[in-house]
Image (cartoon, rainbow, N blue to C red; front, side, top):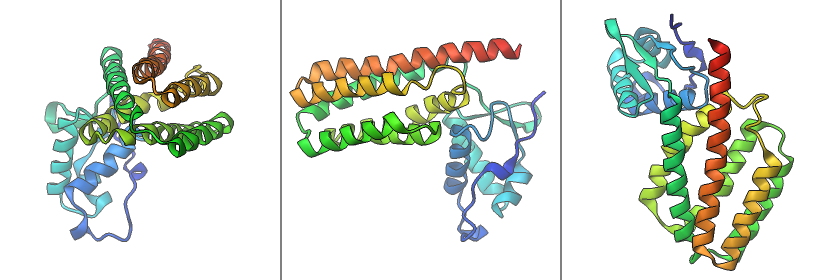
Length: 234
């Protein structure tokens, strides 16, 4: 049976009054809590408790939940219960596979517009990744590394598409990271170095293939960790 969510894990800016808190603000806060893993799969989202937490009526809460349902992050069940929607492993494979295609295309577009200072900055970030022990901080640095390389593409729509794909996949990377073998800093940083060498050489097609393989390596590890975690829970 699903348990009611611990609403206190959702961050609220205490400087905002109830009148200034919109449905978009509530959706953003809840989205962050879901993607960070603070709101677990299957948790029941009580509209009254959410309204009290944000200091608003239930109207913007309902609108926020509709937004999150459209994004596939929550689902409505019988008796008007709304719960955090889990992602089955088949859908997770699809999310990672789409992410690989988008990221590969982005780096291919970016190579011709890449500058030496950006490549050097990416190499410095990669060195920081080698030494970062905190997995949450490591994921943040890893995202910064990739975004640094993709921005020169100028592909605004593709970057907008990528953000929710990364969030949805990293939700499970965080969830299943402990003791699972997902966190592979030395292997990942070696792959980063290979990508940077290809970018620096101007080989856009090879850089695309390397980025796609890089994302799919993570996909395979996350999915395998998920199979183990869900098998142990039965």
